[in-house]
Image 1 (cartoon, helix red, strand yellow):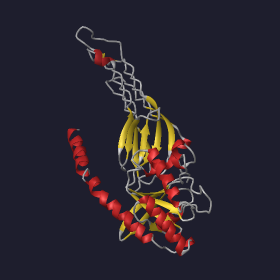
Image 2: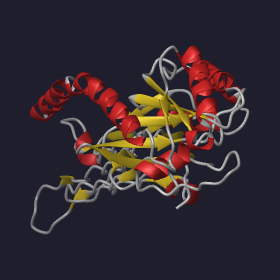
Image 3: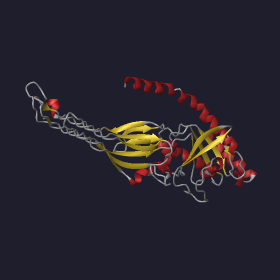
Image 4: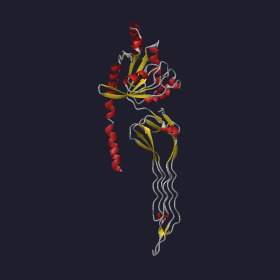
Length: 351
């Protein structure tokens, strides 16, 4: 299935049904009078985060969503039926922006979250509503109110615990394939990865999700290459694993290049906890390995990990370090849960 992380969608809620002009006329009934019913409400447009989706590919083939008009009022004081609502189903992590692609309308971070994007129009009043002591036979009824229409942008940011960053061909996809069941494309040339990938890693009876994005190059924050487009997919992660390839002539320069792009992108990526590792160490001699690890330690300020997907060296240590960083941030997120559920319970009680 093709990965799509952004889509433009047009939505329109349903118009309200028109009120009815009707009078009661029955044999042997001395007094009649107006009995036109009200129109029904038009359908609303909702958006909901559901399980089992990880792409917005459905919205490549259908970009228009319209709810139906509410039922019209009828005689005998019969109110028109409410039109059914329309629900857009998206993966968790989807953000909804206005037509300017900058104004955030809602952010669906949890499965089951549901927001109303456009309210249906109210139904019009029938002539029974306008009966007064001085106007016993009104011959007027209101049309239903029009629904709302707007164009929105859907932007997906993957929900993951850890993210992989680095220059192209740094071994990110190889690492993901080695520690998870994900099967990304792997080849010995830059930009093998063209879209983000997800995998679930397991270590010491703990599981967490790892996101892999295309490699960053110098000037990525200005649109050079393709990695900048996917940086949003690691915004929600708790920790970043920064891989520097041992095949780089200047490992310190390679590290600085990616760090500059993370800082220029902003959105808090540069402040996230970072684990730095030298990948593909199996390709080096002992002397070259020690030299490059020392160069990387000098610029990072702490000893980097040494990784090899071929010999499995350092893979377990990297996973345990990632698990430790993720666990250290978990209590802060859990502390917010009781308040969120309390608000939901209060809202139900009010209804």
